[in-house]
Length: 224
Image (cartoon, rainbow, N blue to C red):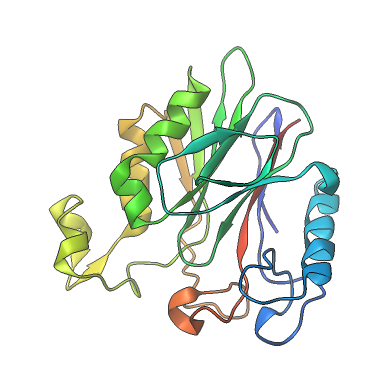
C-alpha cells in the first residue's frame, strides 16, 4: 500500500500485492466484477481495510459507470464514481485499473474526504468538480497510480476534450488532466504518484495490458 499522509485522515492507494486471489487476479484484487471468487475478494478487502485499522464490514463503494456522480458514503453498489464522507471511521473505496484513483480532503473546519474513480469520460464530464463541491472549503488532493502518458494512446475524439498540450503523438497525459481539473475546482495542493499501471505488472492491474480478465486496485480512505 502507498499511504497518503494527511492529518485527520486515513488514505492509501493499494497495489496488487498482499492478497489471496490467484491467476490473473493475483493477489490483492478488490472486485468480483471481473470473475474472481467473491470470497477471496471479501478477504482481500478485509486485509486492505485491516492494514488501515478500518472496519471492512462498513466499507462503501460504487458500481462505477464512468460518470460525474458523487454520492455520500454509506451504501454499496449504487451507480456513481465518487464517494464522500464526514463520518469518522467509515471506509470508502474507489476501484481503478488504469483510470485514476483520487483522494480529496478538506483542510479547514469540518473534516470531509472524497475518493474518486476518474477516467477520461468522468474527467470530461466533471467528476472532480462534483467531488470538490461535495466537500466545500479548502481542500488538498492526491492522485494515485494510473496509466501514464507513456502508454495511454487515445483518438482525436478524446484528446479534443482536454487542453491541447496534454496530448503528444496521440498519447494523453491523464495525470496532468486530473491535476488541472483539481486546481480549476479550487484544490489548493495536489500530490501525484505518477506510476504507470500498464508499465508495472508486478505492482498493478491494468485494463490496457490485460483486458477484462484482471483484478483492480484502488484508493481506500476514511476520516480519522
